[in-house]
View 1 (cartoon, rainbow, N blue to C red):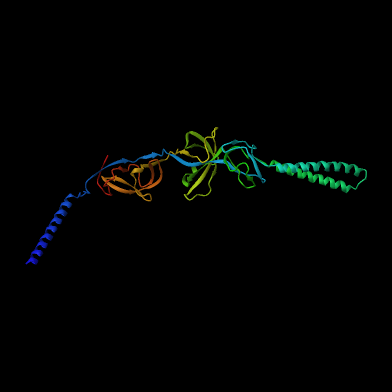
View 2 (tube, rainbow, N blue to C red):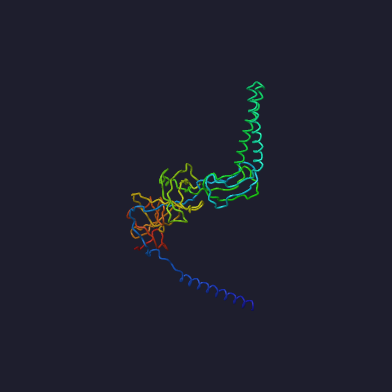
Length: 349
């Protein structure tokens, strides 16, 4: 008897759960919003017309020094004095570092004494040779010894001159790489000299825009740090080989300001205004849907939206130039894309 009661209770509970679930499902279905695809969607749209491209192309680049070198010694020696510091402005030929030349000067004195003795020998042997008192070969040997000593003297003078390391050109000391007491040797950098009175400015230009730049022509440039200062740059090089981004380097030679405020490594830009009179279909970039590979827009015809494939030839600011897919007089949606789909009924203003 108890078994029958338990089974009956279980069946009743199952029935109650099934009824409750069914009621919940019906309530949920009633609450879900069912979108009416035939309902008109309010959008914002514009009518296209042919326009001139009033755009300014900006190309960013970096300023670099026209000349820069690391100065090293031509001979070995201990550094007695460093006459400049980082930031010093130097002129071509100005002494920068003095090496120890004491031993070389002593050697020069020794050679000068030898030369004095050899010159006296030559004079004496010349008199004796003219009187046939000695053989001519003795005079020749004395003359050759004198010539050799003079060459040795010239060599020592040249070595002594190389103990003074001078600036190779006008510039600024941008790195001090040694101190007094250090040992200098050929190939070991001691100072870095940078000339920023002339600068090189390099940009990268896409291949379809390379024709805007002409060799030896002047263009206006600005440094990001000093946008109010306009610089003149002359194109000295256009690249013959594209880089990985399929663009070409274009390099300008730029005169720095009188106070040299444009520094090496600063960023800048050159801007070109498009003066073409040709008209194009130009649309807001915000109206483009789809992907970068296949951009699309919604056009409106007979009160319905039509998803249309387009081809973009270029972009500038927040606009895009369309070369295929749209014509003068087409209406495109620029706002109100929520719930919009291909073939939807639309109301636009």
